[in-house]
Length: 310
Image (cartoon, rainbow, N blue to C red; front, top):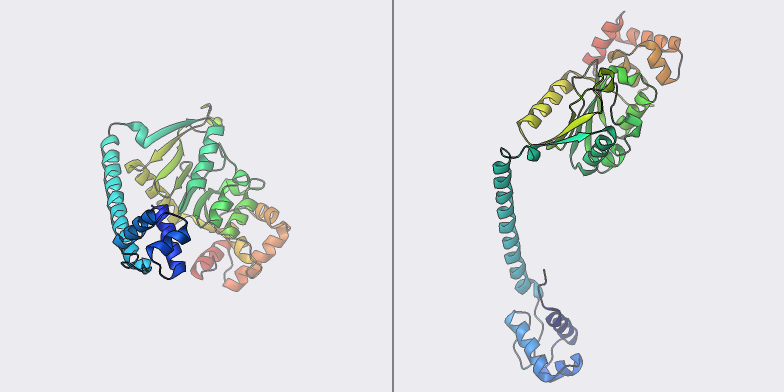
């Protein structure tokens, strides 16, 4: 938006430097004819930016131009309301006529992987994620979009199937993400694969993985609808039941160990991840049971939750 034509803006700036001038003085300084100088000064006077002649002096611009800005802001705000109303009317009327508005089908692992990357790159607030044990498009260590998203303030909440934690490299990748700000939890089994961005777009595979002989992976991109609302509710219900996966901490070295125990991982898998022996894991758990005053791992799990250790 131009508040002033370029010629008038230059005239105003020059008059400010001159601290006042007659038409002839201004014309000489601006290297223009007297008639053109008079026209520019009078135009500025009508805008309330200079005093009347014969000696024209610059006036503060915030009063005169401030009113112009206010009117422009009011016009922009009114325009935004019109656009928003038209957009809502469009969505309301096309939602029931066009399935393409609500859902798009993506076929093949490469295309699905690209959509998962786009979903994270465009997210502004939050990513919700169901991560099953056999990814069909993107393994955890391959998800290079998460770190930049976390850095720009996108919140990640991810639920992992327990079997995924035991796969090489996956748990280390999860723990690293937790250290960067991801909130991770785990459950024995998840019902579907799912990714949701900002609660207005979801990616949900429709065809099961290759172990069922279903061919190429096929997923649906689901936009704002009752179906998307149901998927969000499904995620939240599983999130409430899931067990937290903690990051590694020098101050609290047993938090990760406890979270893996509560998640149901076997001692051998815990030992492999922590780079210690299975016997060391058992000794550390025995020590924690003594601190908690219990004589079983079930009791330790209960006390860890009760005492807020996780």
